[in-house]
Length: 227
Image (cartoon, rainbow, N blue to C red; front, side):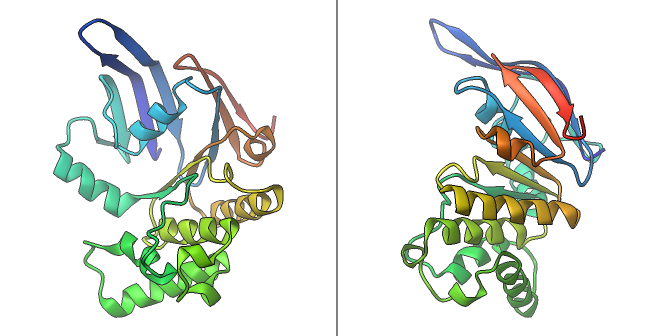
């Protein structure tokens, strides 16, 4: 098992009120699974994804990644864990405007002990894999929304992470570009990538291997696409 969450709770406290974002979440993901997370706004999807990405910590419960408990690690160790194991795809692309596409992708390899020649090879592989090699020297403003998202996917996969986390990856795209992004994600999954994707699109969720619905901070449905 790649991921095992057990009895995860996330509480937010202030002087006057305590809000529970996640309630007693049990969740597991096998290597090479493609899981879609769905639910209405405010249901806890973003909190859930942030905990999976170790950007946020649960208030209680266990999060094991390849049998290693993550909730007890300090921030420096978690940062190293993210660099080595996780790739992120965001709804708003999060590309740096004054860097070329090639340099944006290279950022994911920063602080990793990878020789320069190997970095060049990985960047070329990632750009070719998503079909934007011809845009390597362009800047984000010179690309369409679909091309920018493909660049963001290239940045997510260039480090060959064990887990890709995608937060509404088609949310800012038209139907055609959204379909192209889903085609890329499906192909990556077919090649062995493990993907967890938050989406509001039932059609895109149906393209994943498993759909998980969250409501009021609880998992209310987990069903295989085969069903």
